[in-house]
Amino acid sequence: MAVTAYNPKIVAWYTGLSTDTKPTARVEAGSLFQELDTGVVYEYDGTTWFPLAQGFKQSSWSVTSDSTANAAVTLSRAAETGKRHYITAFEAVLRGAAAGADTRVELRNGATVMWDTYIGNAAPRGERVGAVFTHPIELTANTAANLVVAAAGASALTTVSMSGFTL
Image (cartoon, rainbow, N blue to C red; front, side, top):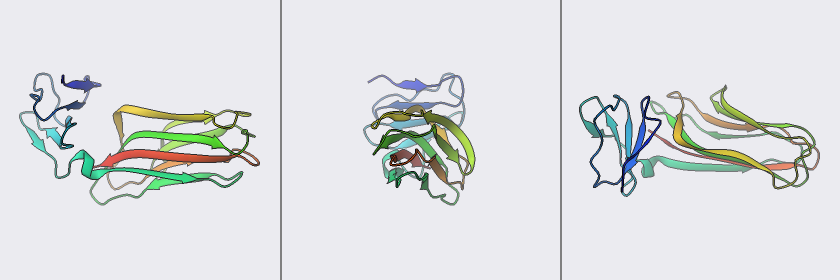
C-alpha cells in the first residue's frame, strides 16, 4: 500500500500500513502517521517518528442523538484533561417532516464555530448534510466537541452523529 499524505503543505496527517516506510523528506514536525492495520498513531518530531500513548483505534469514538419535534439538539463529546479531540466526520439528517425553516448545523470547538452549513427551508424528509474530513479537524486541548443543530420546524426532527478520535 502506498503512503497517502492529506494536506502535505502544512503539518500533515499521513496513513499507511505498519510495513510501510514512514516519510521523512519535507515532513513538518508535529505531523501524524496512522498505521491503518494496527491503529497506532505516530508523531514526527523533525527527526524521528515516535508512537503516541494511545493508538487511533483505542481512542476513536462516535456519538449520536435525536431531537424532538421543532427542537434544537446539541451533541457533545466531553473535554478530556490534557487531550485534544480530532473530528473525522459528522452528519445531520432531517426526519419526521420537511424543514419549516433554514436549519443551521454547526461543528464547534467548545463555543467557537469551526464549520457550518444549513439544511434549507422546505428541505424534504431524509435531507442530510455532513462532511468526512480527510484531514481531521483538530480542536483545542481540554475542550468539548459540539455539533449543534437548530430547530427545523413543526413536526421536523433531526438525527445527528459525530465521529473522531482523542489524543
